[in-house]
Length: 374
Image (cartoon, rainbow, N blue to C red):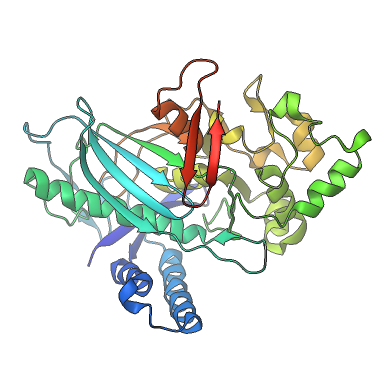
């Protein structure tokens, strides 16, 4: 049994959540496997919902906080030095609309050393609505990280067991970066760390009426009214419209806002919050797709937040894409610094070496269709 660890902020203290979820993840994976495709769709959905319910229960169990040097059931945590035969390695979390991947590369050569991928289930409550369970995103992150850890142990014959409850190698990875689906919107409780609603995915169009109502108030119905400040047309894609819908329509979100417990973020922020034990951060590429950031100042814009009735204190701190985003606070790569966060399309632009004005790249994706970025 593999144990996954997450951290949430509880009453301003970080508490360790020990979640034994490996079998649940295997069950979900098996249900999605082709060998189980004979199951009727409604029966498969029922079984998946039952498993995810158990996942939620497991995530809700809080372990007793015992200080940085202790973990799990009180066992002493032992750090082991990295052997000389292991080169400098860097890790990357790639969280997309259809799956999550964790990859480890050799820094000097760029050689892929290990990787793991887990599919993400999308939820469609009604036509035009697309959601993802925020807990399933984190479970996929933990699962792929754990799988890659085991691969590295085998690949380098490391003198450490797969039970990272008692042993870990703090410098096995030099750093980790995060790449993520953009615009998708998450809200959660700052005191419990629990999500208040499913992730509203970038392609969701439930906010069309909000966009239309706002455009109707603009002379000439100019949907580019805020483009000078945001770089964006008014569209259902962007997070501000999704956040406005959540604040206006979800009672749990209304209560959390009134009681000063509401936090907002895109998927990168949600992942960072969980991996670092409560750091509320984002980068400029993700913030630029919310419709709330001024692209000249690279800061949240007061007038835009006022226009959408979004309190600025629920927004994450904006940082450069290459910056200090904290360190993993638990799990097999605990203490590894997170030094980069970037939205997926921006990452692809950079990855294809499009660094000069006028250079372009085209994306043909499984979920995002095709896109051209300048």
